[in-house]
Each structure stands twice: as structure tokens, then as C-alpha cells.
Length: 294
Image 1: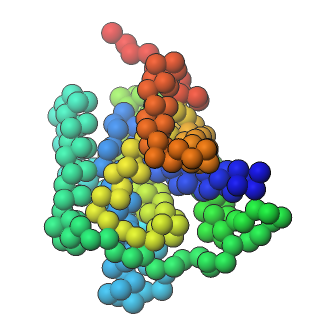
Image 2 (image 1 turned 90 degrees about the horizontal axis):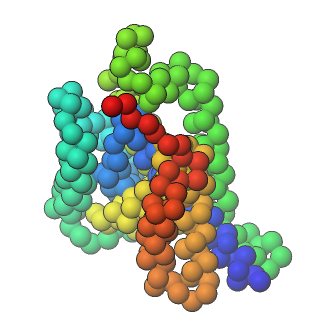
């Protein structure tokens, strides 16, 4: 039972990171109907930015984390302006934007590999190593902090979208871009802000992930991004609570597969879940059907 509970806590830990990354996917998709496959690689960008701030600039870990988050936000805004906005302004087909997103992902991975080589870089310790013991269950401090931060961010993001002026603009653009523009909403500024927030969330996820798995490589964000995308689809892409539910569900599924001794199959189980969801309920757990006018 103690092994099962420990695996359950590990699943919640990694699932909270998937959920945080999935929030970025679902925000961008909700606004511009784009699957930003470069989003996962922003986690890698954030990890290297934090390492740069620590090793070369001598920042303390908390200040380096802030620097990494700001760098991720800047990268997200730049990618949107350079790669995606020209396609949107020319009314390019969605497949063009999707191919561009894949191209940006490969550009980031190979660019950082060219700059820093494929050798992994060790990430410094962030949280105390000594775990907390609750009965027979050991809980790492980083696990509790990660889950708490992710839940708090989801609540704050939900309140922001529902209560603030920019949040209302984001919902209006998501509902009907043309009508929102006629009502005086700046479409480009709203989309840029959405990319900035989603990319900042990826920066936070990079710090939390590297705190648990202390190494950075140019390809570290590839599989993370794909699993977070599965989490977004499972929860209902476009739904913030759905992204959280999907992330925790994927994390728990991986943990349970590892608990029964089939850890080599955990990646396959994640993508099997994606196939099942697309066959049974393509809109996801909390997603809603979209009707297109013809």
C-alpha cells in the first residue's frame, strides 16, 4: 500500500507539470485554433535560460527562475510575431500554421544543440532533498510545492480570464474574432498577450520539472510537450479546468503503469489514451463541440 501511495503522489507530481504545460496549449488553441507544437520546446529554452542566469550571471535560484520565465515569454511573443502572425494575416490554411509550428520546434531543438551541444547540463538543487514522512509515505518538498503552485496558477488564471478586461477580450476573440474586432478589441495585442502568458507558464513548468529531474538537454521539451498535448486533448482542448484534469490523469496513468512493473510501456500508454479519446470522445472530458458555419 505504501508503494502504491508513493506512486500516486509521484503521478500527481508529474501530472501537475503536464497540466501546467497543457494550459499553454489550451490557451493558444482557444484563441487562434492553433496547436503550437513549439510550446514544449519553450521548456527547454527556460531551463537553459535559468542555467545561464545561475552560472554566468551569478543570480540566486529564485531570480534565475524569474529570468527564465521572462525569457520564455519573450520567445513566445517573438515566435508569434515572426512565424504565426504573417500566416494569420494572409488567411493561410491551418495546415500551414501547423507545419510552421513543427518547423519552429525543430529550429529551437537543433539551434540549441548547435549552441550548447547535445551533452546534458546539470541543474542545481532547488528544494530541500530531505522528504517529509507521513506515516509510511514519503513526500518530497518539491512535490508539495509543485502541486500547490500549479493549483494556485490554475485558480488565478481562471479568475483572470473571467474577471479582467483582458480576460474578457480573450474570451471574445475566442468566441468570434470578427465580432470582437468590430467591438474595438485589438486582436493582435490580445493574441500576443495570450502567447506571452502561455509561454510564461512553460517557463514556470521548466523550473519545476528541472527541480525534480535536474538536467537540461536540447530535446528535453519534445516528449514533455507531446504528453502535455495529450493531456490537453484528454481534458478538452480549449478548457482550462480540462487541461488540469487531463494533466493529472496522464500523470496518474504513468505512475500506475510504473507501479505494476511496466514502466517501459508508460509512453505507449499515454499515446494509447490519445487514440482512445479521439475515437470515443474527440472533444475530451470538458470540451464542447464546435459548429462551423457553411
